[in-house]
View (cartoon, rainbow, N blue to C red):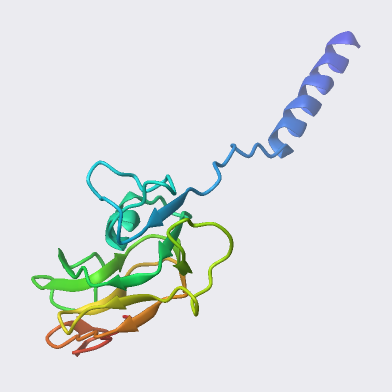
Length: 173
């Protein structure tokens, strides 16, 4: 009887252990900061008093789920990057844009360089101006990108492919 009770108890514990959901602790998303007065070199963009200079550097430093706050100003930093995986176009093509997003992140413009309080895009306009040298924003992959408080200007997708069409998505693609 004691052996049977012990086995039954062991079975019950094993059953409960299997039903018990163990959720590993998830770190809170990191907030990263960008301002025209910032510096990219050696900077992970995680300190508001020491922001990065370019949005692309902050995106590169970010982990999936992070939030990037961008101070007011006109950002014209077009970068050439190799075509990302799953891009709808020739794989030998390089792509030009201010921001290439390939992970789930949030980018929010309209902040002051103090990054205090809420975003106010009207009072603190944040503009991505590709100056006709590429796209403003290229989002690629099975991700979710939340973008708010940004003005997109001067995008030009001439010669850039997208969704099987040439010249697609000058502002945002």
